[in-house]
Image (cartoon, rainbow, N blue to C red; front, side, top):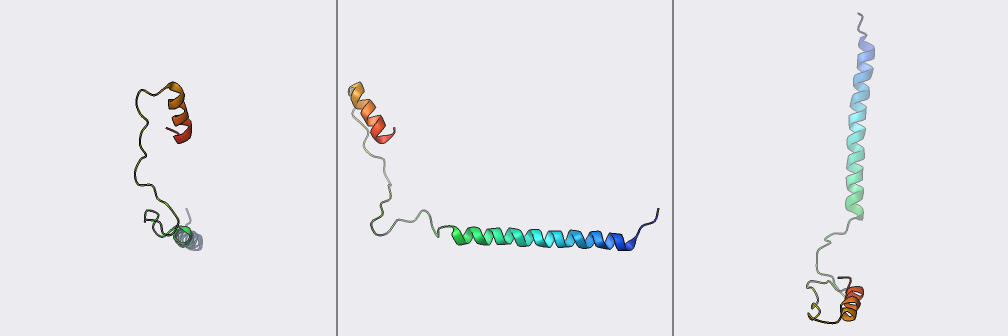
Length: 77
């Protein structure tokens, strides 16, 4: 069996270039994700924005079925 050094060097070069390009693509995707992501998604909003921290009051127990259904459609609970 004859092993060609030139063939193995080409294969090694291909693998090295493939790995380098893979790392470059991965780094580019991470950079793009950081670029479009908000700085801190959990910070308290400023200005006229409102952030909900607490649940609203639950309906009274023993209400009519119509009240409970209206509450469900209004609040989605």
